[in-house]
Length: 74
Image (cartoon, rainbow, N blue to C red; front, top):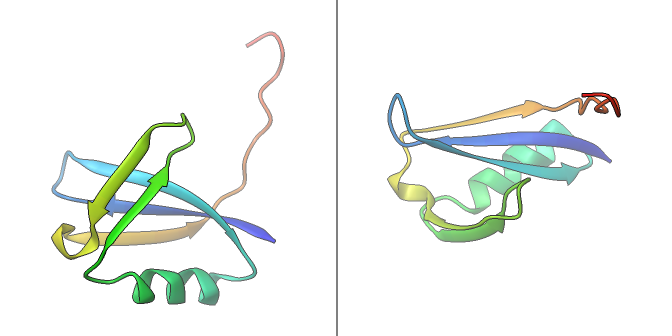
């Protein structure tokens, strides 16, 4: 499984990020297509619950995400 970051942009300053695990970039793209013009809900990396209508976002961006482990002294 790979981790992908999906960013939903509402305008130049407002966006929500979502992280998913799936087999490939193509399957992440298919998920976004399947959710088009629907209400979706998810918790972000901080545990905050979000509901949004995907038809109200201006741009959806998908990228592979490589999580870096934080050091104990940071």
